Image (tube, rainbow, N blue to C red; front, top):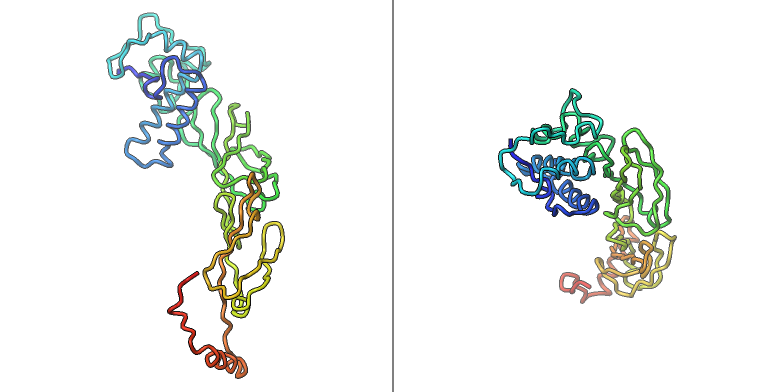
Length: 301
């Protein structure tokens, strides 16, 4: 069988610390997880990273693996040395019947089929990167924009467990909340946040965007108009002659932070239908009073 250079697979030196191995593995696992990466070799590279991490993140397995010395080269034919123990029994599972979790013959020849407990792919809404030692788990949590504005506590199910999560003020989509020691094997739960759709606001980092419908006379005459914000209704001073599509800013009315985000308001002029004779006459009067007005020749604001 071929020798597996686990350090080379993870892209770390043989002197790498546990933290360096953990970071390297996380990066590869996220990049090549088959649920996210559809390249032909993604699953094989994910399994290789998983196997390398299974050995190098376990001090006993790593020490046994390092007994082979640094002179083996990836791709060489390999036979375990005479009397090799390889840490069998150190993980409590060697010699048991069962699947090695998709690991290679090289791994099995060193540690036995029972030395590892999982391959890849999780349940309960998270991705399990497998292994017999503590592993971080990833999950996704959709929250309301109001949760970020006010702060909140939400529940999330990880496998058969329900965890209460404190949502800090000012979090944004894509940020991660770490729940230390809450993964099934004692690792951390990493919650990636997203925002549920909101009827008024669209977030962009800490900024919020919305559309504000106004009447033709509000747009023409200007003046204060009420605008909804996450902190309550405020008045926006609409400039006279505002056209549809104009964007105005409410400073500091976005999500909290240092600095706080802004709320951007895009004006949309709504023209009422002329249903009665009196209403039609008003539009006729406007046509007479504004003979030079040609909206098709006006530059947008």
